[in-house]
Image (cartoon, rainbow, N blue to C red; front, side, top):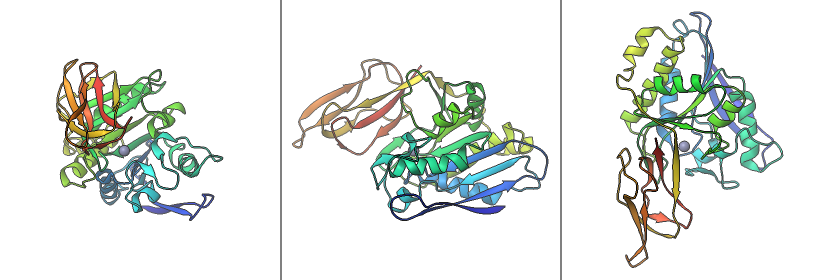
Length: 311
Ligand SMILES: [Zn+2]
């Protein structure tokens, strides 16, 4: 295992150091798989899973190379900042592939994308529900020229729900997976865990997913796949999703939970005024399944309420 540090010095303010590991397999030829976590600063389950991956991978049984970055967004991690980088308030996962002439987070994205993501054959980006967010485990990939290979990664990861995001209606642009897909790298975002909690079950589920992908790509022996507890049930696949935002500022009281099928017109929740009177009722615009849900009642106007995956 090679210990490396990505040093980023041309940011306004203090330099950023991102420690990571590279494991070169000695069991034969194979692809270069990059596994990152901590793109969002308080999504800890993936970070812990990547740390365990580094300890677990044995070069003697590995084919190909794994680059593993446990905590990518160092500024957001150390400041315990949900979703955004404090320096400019931007979401790193909307800024890839980055811009060397942009603001803090654009530069950070560029300095990460070029050496870490661009040289990969495959990319796994591990997330969870951030501090104010419940979540049902799912994988996401983009419509692209390499989407068949990205879907294969998503299915191998073994979570219950898989969302394909079409390029025409890309709900989320500038993400690791969309920027990777744009340059021909099959990539997925895998989401397990919720509310900024680093729980054991979610950490292990992430780790099993990564090991299952390694086996699927022929980088680990097949037994690792079985040992990893590969999914025996095919996941539900979705053609896209609707990110629902609030029309008003209010005290958000969801009426549904993540992973629950809802019908068109079903009540998803209400927003109350400061004295508890109903301001707005939020109805499902289509049948679907909420895969993430804001659990914090504090929702501003245009604030994100939930992500409704649709078939
Ligand atoms: Zn995230």
